[in-house]
Image (cartoon, rainbow over all chains, first blue to last red; front, top):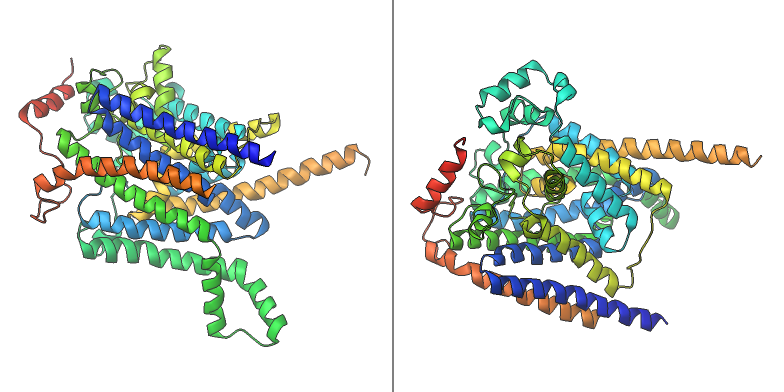
Length: 477
Length: 61
């Protein structure tokens, strides 16, 4: 029976790969420009395979750490970040990076805090929910839907919410003299972006050290060593002292009956690092894929003489949904949440909601048809890649959400949607990629996310205990 | 599992290889791959038609 299930799974894995191959070949035959979208598709597929293989979920990682004291996944994610950064440093040094740094200020920490709470409530971060959707998890799909809808609504809210905007933001937003169709003085997020976030400095570790980021010294010494390896080593040290050392010391003392030497401490630290090989390997391949994607996308841009996929869509006759700059969301590397907001934004627009008068959709990202949105191709393929890996390891299973889990998924997705837009990205775009690229704002988002995850876990513990006490009382225990 | 996974890895690598090959010539033509020192991050050169296209999009209609 097990073999039969396995064969069925194998067939489905090849059907998924075959489908993506067919889409790539047929669209390329139709128009050469579609290769740009296919590049996103195949890299998305690799991301999905890596995520599923490495169980790459920030929510699970912090929940394991704070709730049950298991640091394995957190350590794996930190090691993956270091490996990803190592690969990225080479891409940056060659000047091929398509990465754009984000403004650095306390807003990133606040956004991370909200996001962190949300991901624990939802039981999956933005990337984790995508790969779990590929495993057939209905709750994860609901989280993705909730993040998508929340973002699409949040970026366009105005009216009463304008009253919550500080006057200085309002004035600063108007002073940017954005095109009149954007109406920067109306809408909470518009005024937050143009009136506050855009005024904040951009800080890369290489530049803070007086080095040029697109140079070997800047990328490897500034962004990689100082910006990633040292902070990550300190964080790992904190994890070692608070969650690993005690058990390790007890074990050694029991075996040998004496105290820990410095050599023992180093062995314990190294053992902790080496305990998460699977996640670390996934991080290495994510880094390689992300670097290659930047290389391929930049090459295609040069080849086609464009700076953004919007020009290609326009040349192919797809004018609808382009921003007023003629652009669409086209990061050139791994990203998760913006394309989720875009497809819901597109649906809302088709239903009659004018949501192209805001900065997020109207000025920057557009709302192209999801069927021709490069970043949407990446996300769909990511789900497909995760499904392929899950099928091949017999881990694919349709799981219907219960009412309780669905509620938490919607609430968690809501918080993650808000956090994503405040932080200009999720655990991938605002933390993982930014940190790996030496962008200081990534660490600020990460600190907030860790704090949020801690609060989320504590709240969940309290909620569960309260619920159990009620159930016990009802059973007269 | 491993046998099938390797087949899939080969298929994915095939598509990626094609794309790498497809995007490589522009690098060589612009001198980046040949080490001729094109300014890092300068992006592609746009012809006048494309520049006008972007410029016109800023105008309010």
